[in-house]
Length: 92
Image (cartoon, rainbow, N blue to C red; front, side, top):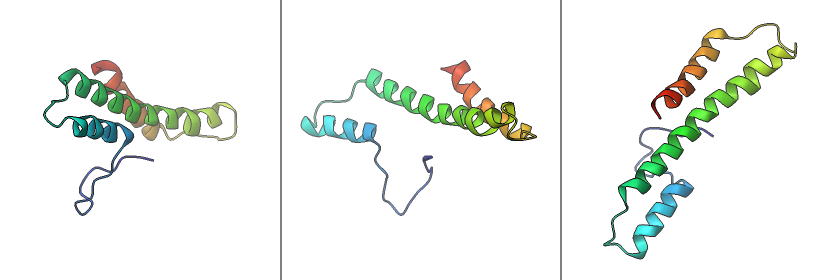
């Protein structure tokens, strides 16, 4: 399942982390969420999404090719997926 960016008629999809964040602020509405907690949640989300791309590349593109089940690899797609993962690797 990939996250959908954009609007969906005003209804937002809640992830478990956003639910936990909302629940923690609902207990004491005057307490602000620490910046370190927000940074940790954002960092986890970025790594999770970027890892999906490299997992797809390895499991669907490279492994079948290495085992001889496929004759070719879509090089453009493989490079794009690795680039998507590589940015998180370099910057985070």
